[in-house]
Structures are given as structure tokens and as C-alpha cells.
Length: 258
Image 1 (cartoon, helix red, strand yellow):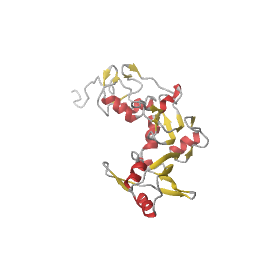
Image 2 (cartoon, rainbow, N blue to C red; image 1 turned 90 degrees about the vertical axis):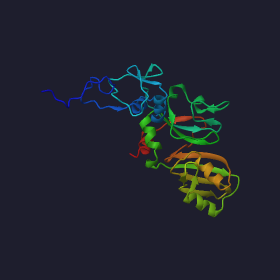
Image 3 (tube, helix red, strand yellow; image 1 turned 60 degrees about the horizontal axis):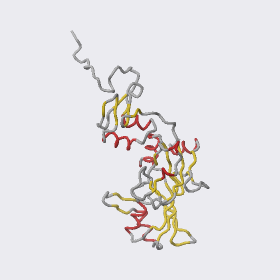
Image 4 (cartoon, rainbow, N blue to C red; image 1 turned 180 degrees about the horizontal axis):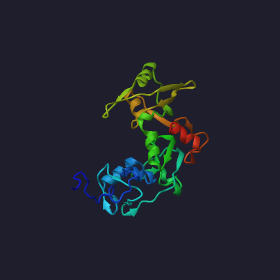
């Protein structure tokens, strides 16, 4: 008598002639592992109908594949695996961190050498901000160092249009509720500059969009300059603006909590 529980044959990417020892992975992870882009960007490509698996367009998030047996294409071009890069970049002001700037906007990719054009930033620094930016084409690495649960601190030097009162500093440490997200955005440390009452060193653990500027604007203060000096204790040092360097093995391990 035939076994009624035996699964029916399937022509889906994750089922076809797959060795039992090979585990499937999510499609966005497979794309990120190739170094093409981060997982979030991979999801955008999938939803936009730009990703094909074994010649068939896939638009469903969460689709699983077997990397050694299934072929992935993006916009009809086979996905290749780039050498993994882990970089520290000193972003100048006047540049956006997206690949395509708006009209008259410059993008950091104009400053990044051709061999590193596949990297993505870990988080963002807006056009008017400068400083330490981690870049990589390793999607899992980027996910780990940007996810809030890993609590990696970032330190900024800021200049305001006026000095803050002690009460305002305490409000920033307690948290400013940002809208429309309805999120309580806290600064974990605020150190006034003893030589300039308008300059401060600020540490963030969380990183909401334009958190420092928006939090201070809620108090009626304007950020004149914002420069990130470190990312999880990795310092810019003497790295010139617009230049990058490879992370050391020790720095990479530190970011991953090893």
C-alpha cells in the first residue's frame, strides 16, 4: 500500500533534487551572502520583481532556495560572488550615503574606488553630517552591527547654535519622543566641551533617523555641525575625509562581539 504521507514532487527551487544534507536559506540571505547588497535591499529587489531563481521571477518575501543547486539572477544577470570587504570610511559633508543622489546631490560612491562599489553602509549619515561610516558587502555582517539588539555605541561631536541648559541635557538623556514613529529616543551620554559651551560629545546606542537633529530641534536647538568620531570604539584616527581603509581582523571581531 503506498505511503499516503509521502510529499508530492515539486518543481520549486527549494525542493528539486536536493541532497538531504543541504539546507535551504532565505533568498534575501543568499543574495546578501553573495556580496551584492544587504538583506533589506535584497527584499526591495525581490518585491520589485527584479530577482529570478532558475529563470523564474520571484516576488514573495521569505522564499527559500538551495544556494549550490539554484541559480539566482538579478535583472536577468547571473548573481556572482564578490570578495567580502569590511571598510571604515570617513564621510565628508555634502554627500548622501545612497547610491543615487537626487538632483544636484553627490553620493559617497563617487569617492569609493571601483573595486568596492558593491558595499553598503551600516546605517546612515545624512548629507550635512560627516565622520565614521562602516561599509561592507557582507549582508549578515551589516545586519549584526546595525540591529538594535546588539547595542553598539556611536559617538558624535556636535556644535549647536546655543548652549543647552542642565534641564535640557537631562531631557535628552531621559529621552525625547520622536513622531511620527512614537519612539522614545535617548542619548546615553552627553559631555559638554569645557572650552566651548555650544559643543558637545554625544553617545547613541539606538539610532533613529536623524535622531540627534530631531531631538535637539524638539528643544528649540539647531545642530550646526555633526561629526561621528567612532563606531563601537572604532576610531577614525588620522583617516582623511573621503578616504577609507580596511578594518583589521580585531576590529571586525569587536564589532561582532567576539
